Image (cartoon, rainbow, N blue to C red; front, top):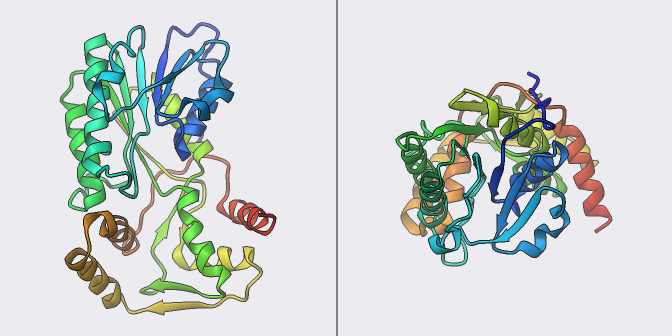
Length: 299
C-alpha cells in the first residue's frame, strides 16, 4: 500500500505540534515534517537533542509532558498535534499511567483549550483487543479519552518496529534462536521512516484508526532465519512447547512488579498470534538486520 506523501506543503495552512521527537518513531516524524516543509513546534524535555531540526519554520521548545504547566500556551496557533509519547519499559519512577495516559491527557487538554483541530496518537496494533495487558491499559485509556474529546482524531496502530526485532538478532549472535510453538505465526514489522510518512499523511486523512505494517509478512521462523543469516550463523531454531510461554507469563505476573512483567507479558502474548496489518513502506527487515550487524561489528 502506498501513502499519500505528496501533501501540498507550499499552500498548507497546517501547523503541527510534535511530542515525542527524541524517541525512535518521533525522530522520523520530525524528519518527515522537515522534508515536507510543514511548520512545526517540536517539544522535548531535552531540546539539545533536537537542535539539528531547528531553523526555518520550526521551533524547538523545552517541555515535559508529564508536567502540565510546561505545556501551557504551546498549542496556540497549532492545527494538529502528533503524539508518539509512550514507554515500553517503566523507568525514572514513571509508570505507564504517568506517561502513556496522563502525559498524553495533559497534551490533549491543552490542545482542546487552544482550539486544535486534530490529534494524532500512536498506539499499537490490536491495542483494543489486548487492553488487559499492562502495557496497553494506559494507551487504550487515553484512546478512550481522545475519542470522547470532540476533536478530530486518528489513532495509529502500527505493528512492531524494526528496532523491536533486535531481540532476534541478539539470539542469533549466540548461534541459535528460540521460538515458542511451531513458529508459523506471522507479523509484518515496520521501519520508523515508513511509519512516520503514514503518521504525517494522517494530518489530512479522515480515517479515525489506521493499522500499519511493513511490506513483508514474515513468520517467526522466517524472522529467525533472517536474523541468523545476517549474523552469518547456520540456521538453528529451537521450538519450545507453548506451555512454557504460558507458564512464564503467569510466573512473571505473580512474582515480579509491573515494571518488569509489562514488557515480558506483552511480548509473550503477541508472539502467540498472527500480528498482521495492511502493508506500507519500502524498507525491508532483511536489509535492516544486515545494517544492524554491520553497526555492531564496527562498534
